[in-house]
Amino acid sequence: MSQQPPDLVKKGQFYFIYDRPPYIVMEDKTKRGLEVHDHVLDEKYGVEADRGMIHDMDGIGHKVGIRWYFPRAQFTVEQVVELAEDMERRYRAIRELTCPDDE
Image 1 (cartoon, rainbow, N blue to C red):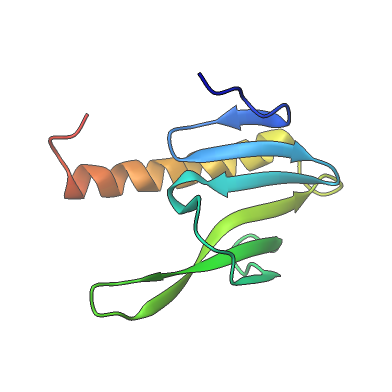
Image 2 (cartoon, rainbow, N blue to C red):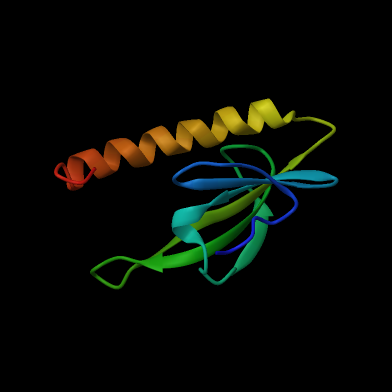
């Protein structure tokens, strides 16, 4: 049985949230293991983020967020959890559309 990282604050089906001062880090579980290609300012959240590349069936690459670094001076854990829960709701809706028989 694997142990939880000591800095893990919360986990959902599709995300992890870590307390890594000076940041609260939100990680997309669906992108774990993806190689980080760049570290940029994320336009959606306005925070630094690690991005990777996934390729669609046509071989076209798409840059996707892997983890986001929310400064503790500007965000609370509760705010980051709400953003993670929004991401979780989006993934559940996609799963329901694409795999309606999955539980």
